[in-house]
Length: 286
Length: 286
Image (cartoon, rainbow over all chains, first blue to last red; front, side, top):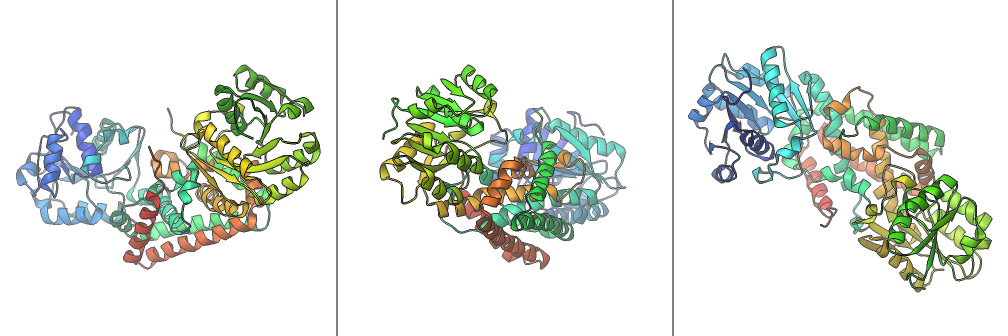
């Protein structure tokens, strides 16, 4: 299957990410529909030209006509949805997702699907500290990374289709990782950073801090504004891997702590130089 | 003394901050001169209209004519400079600074100055991950915080003058803190955040991380690109206070770690909600 404009795309779950997928694809001329919980979300999405039509119940017609279904749901909701409605998905349909953890869902979902339906997992590394379709904004994909997460059950064609979707949405870099490798990467790059921001924010209750702050604290704690329902699920779904990354980080923090405690300036500067060299690779390309 | 355009302002140390002070004040019509180590820096600053004139040696004439002197030097360089050249400063001159630590320098410098010369400490909470006068940019002050740090030796007039300077430079919020309180605040808001970013960056040597990252990691580690000479000095100049803030943070991180380890989702969400509520106060006003 090729991602061309004859393909009908169904988005399940019109939140910030689902809504942004819909916006980008509709604007580019794709036929996009949606299934989501609230009728008001569907109304909003139709009114704002994010989708052609949609349904607040699991409409078998929308599922049947779709060639590609994108699930933008919380992990456990996604699994539950497939358990209940997976049989409605037609052979030759490809399904993908945006879920932030993979090992704990990908194999289960692939095992549950009807014959001829292929699930290719993906993780768009884009978001905002706001939830809901009204914040949908295709610009969040620009310059961002997109990870395709295949298993042995996936065909090369579908891996390519999934990468095409990422490119069509405007992502800058498309990578391929196994579920295990993905979850390790994400534990370090995303989950640990959220743990750090939350811990820092909870560490000090002095009033008026915002009057004295500089941008370093502001930038570091941007993600301390966090959706507790979603992130607690993501943390627990990737518990062992996350704990292991937290351990590595604690060790590194401890090492720096000791250089300060012992006045070991040379060792401290060595860490800072390593940090500076590594960080340079993360500068965004223009 | 009032900060009006009859006042002659001398900047000692034309780096990123000194250069940005010079740029802002010169553009607003103040007479600004500079003393800095390299003649090439002076040449650049004159050519780019940051200063009217300057000197690469300690020119007694520039010091004599100045009504206000701003020191933008590393802490130990500042102390050393006053030790060697403080006697050249004329009575009724006010001096201020941009130094990131206060307790360990403010009292010493006030004690060293000639009679009639008043030092009012200040900390502009603005910067960039780039050093040098060629990055001078007055825009870094917009929307930023500025802290005046008086001791008992300072007059109310001078505290006001120093606040005027902050306002003139375009800072959004001017606050007043004691040296001790300032150093605590800065240990938490600025030094600890740099410790975190450096530790995180040193914690993982997996290759290609930048291909998989999202903006949360990028924003959190922006300051991991760090001037090791300056920051190691700042950390060690505020050692006990910084270690104590690092302890508080470690405790908070440990608490979150245990909620994940024990699968205590309710406690985890409680921390996330506290974090979210506290973070909201840091949103920049438009």
